[in-house]
Length: 204
Image 1 (cartoon, rainbow, N blue to C red):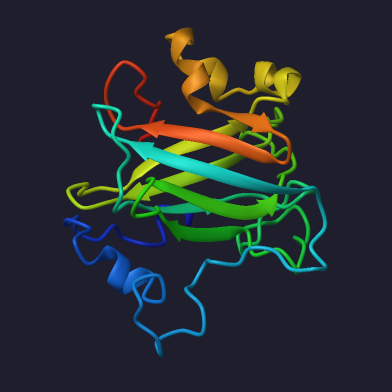
Image 2 (cartoon, rainbow, N blue to C red):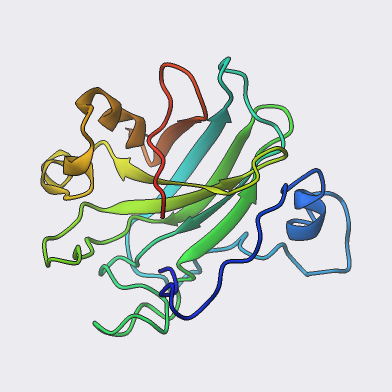
């Protein structure tokens, strides 16, 4: 859950690379002794409530080539639709659920994986329930301002049809760019930075 804009001022944008992995995921880069494990690498534990899922997210450039130096963060509600945030006023979120994760893309395939739980539905500001979704934030060398998008689930067709954010997308042919396809317990999602299949990105 993002902080209200009146509390924190936005810092100046600057290129994220080529040191983004060294600063944020040192263990991934082979730099030990900074953190026992990279921050955001573990989202759930044995006591976390909800359906366990795996996300396999691939970032592609305008030619369809995997981006090998991207870094992704995910933000989501717990299985009951509550955020692990001081700004959450609807109840107490699952204390065994981090609600946030960070992973770099694989240097060979451009894929990163998150082991998490399927989120519950969260109310929109007018009270309507949004479909289960996960917020993605993407940075890489050359991306000066992090890209913000969402991941929805292919097996939540009814909820997706009711979602007030998806309903705002004028060009309906672009809605599938936000839908992750389920393959067993794994959801596969491609983020296209440019091109015919360009993913829908949000301003905030």
